[in-house]
Amino acid sequence: MAHHQTEARGEPRSIQGGKVEAVRVWLLGGFRVSVGSRTIEGGEWQLKKAGSLVKLLALARGHRLHRERIMDTLWPDLDEKSASNNLHRVLHATRRALDPAAENATARYLSLQGGLVELSPDGPIWVDVEAFESAAANARRSREPAAYRAAVELYVGDLLPEDLYEPWAEETREGLRRLHLALLSELAALHEERAEYVPAIEALRRALASEPAHEETHRGLMRLYAASGEQRRAIVQYERLAKTLAQEPGAEPAAASRRLYEEILVGRPLQTPSRSGSRPSEEAASPRHNLPNARTSFVGRKREMLGVKRALAMTGLLTLIGTGGSGKTRLALEVARDLVGSYPDGVWLVEFAPLADPELVPQAAAAALGIREQSPRPLARTISDHLRSKQMLLILDNCEHLIEACARLVDAMLDTCSGLRVLATSREALGVAGETNWPLSPLALPDIQGRLPQIEDLVRYEAIGLFLDRARSRLPDFELTEGNARDVVDACRKLDGIPLGIELACAWLNSLAIGQVAARLNDSLGLTHTHQID
Image (cartoon, rainbow, N blue to C red):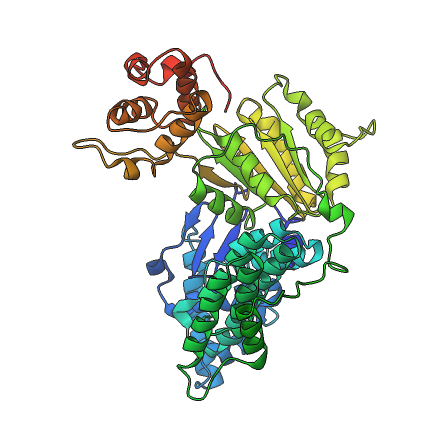
C-alpha cells in the first residue's frame, strides 16, 4: 500500500472535538480536494497559488516539502524575502480553505515545522495518483486481468490538465501516461496469452485512443485481428498506421510492421506469444474469496460500478446507502467480483442480515475470515491483529440494524490495518471517521409526461432494461412493443425504479398479463412490504 496510507491509520480517527478529517486529493483528469464530506470549491482557495501548493504536496513523497523547494518552484524569479512573504500568505489562504470553520487559520491540515511544509500531518490522506500507482504495482504482482482492469479504471485522465505548461507537473504527467499505456498493453498481452482476443483488442484500442501514433499498439491490434480471423480489419489497421505516420514528413511504418502486414496479406500463420513463464501462479489463478455465485444477470449501474471502484481506492471505508430493495447488496457483490484478483489476500463477505444480537458482529466477521477466537483477548483485537499485514477487501452487508457494533469493529480494524478496504451496505451511514458515503439512487426511469420515447430509447433506461431481463427469464419470448410499452413503463414508475420491486413484479408475469400487473401496482409497498432483503 502507499506509504501515506500506512502512516495515516495510526492517527486520531474521530472527527469530533476538533480532530482532523480525511483529506482526499484528486489530480488525474482535474484538481479536486475534499476534507471529510466537504468538497472545496474553486473560489474557496482565494489565491491560485494555494491550490498549487496543495498539488505540490499531494505529489511529494510523504506529502511534505522543504519551504525552500516550494519557493523555488512557485516563485522562481523572486528573491528569497519576497518568495518567503508570498509563501506565508499562501499558507494562510490554504489553511483557511482546508479548515474554514476554524476561528483562526490553524495548522491542522497544513503544518510548517523545521522548514518542512506538510499536508494533513495528523490525519488520513488519500491521493488518486498514489492509489493508481499502488493498484498498478499490485496488478503487476498478481498478473491477474481483474487487477489490471481495476488499475486502469483509476486513470480517469492526464495529471492536472489545467496546469499543462507547469514544468513541475510535466515529468510526473508523462510518467503516469506511460504507466497507463503500459498497463493496457500488459493487460492485452495477458488476454492474448489466454486466446481472449475481444478483451485484448479492447485494451489496445483504449491505448491507441490515448496515443494514436504508437506503432507497437497498432502492430498488436493487427496481430490480434488476424489471430481472431478478422484479416480485413488487420489490414485496415496497418493502413491507419501508415496514414497516421504520414502526417510527419518522412515517417513510415517500421520493418516489423511491414513484415507483419505482408504475413497477414498472404495468410501466413502468425506466431502467438508464448504462455510459458508468464502463466499466473496457482494462487493467483484461483483468487481467494467467499462470494456467492450470481444467479441472475446484473443489469445497469455501470456508472455506479465504476464510481464505487474508484472511490474504494481513495478511502478505507465506503458505505453504500439506500432504501430496502434498492440493490445495495447486489452492487457491492458485483464490485467485489470485479475486484477479485486485485487484493492479494482476497475478497471476503460478511452477512449481517441473519443477526439480531450486536455482540455477534465480531463473531460473524471472524467466521467469514476463518479466524479463531483467542480467549480472553477481545475478538475484535484478534481480527485486527490477523488483518494487520493483509491487503484485503471486506464486504459488510446489511449493517443498518447493527450500526454501532459494525462501526466499532470497522474503527478497530482500520486503526491498525493499512491494507484493508471495507465496502459496507446499510440504510444509514456507519458514522466512522474517514467514511465515504455513496447514496444509491433508484434505477433510471423515462419521463412520460407526454409521448412515450421510441422503443430503442426506452430500453436504454436501467429500470426498463431490468424489467425486460427479468421478464424474459419468466417468459423467454417477452418483448417490449408499442402495445405494452406504456404498461411496462407505468409498472416501473409505480415501483419507483426499485430493483427488488421490479423483480417481484416480473414474477407475476407467469399468471398475469403486463397490463394486469401495472394495474395492481398502487405503490411499491404493495409488492415489497413483506420483503426486507436489500
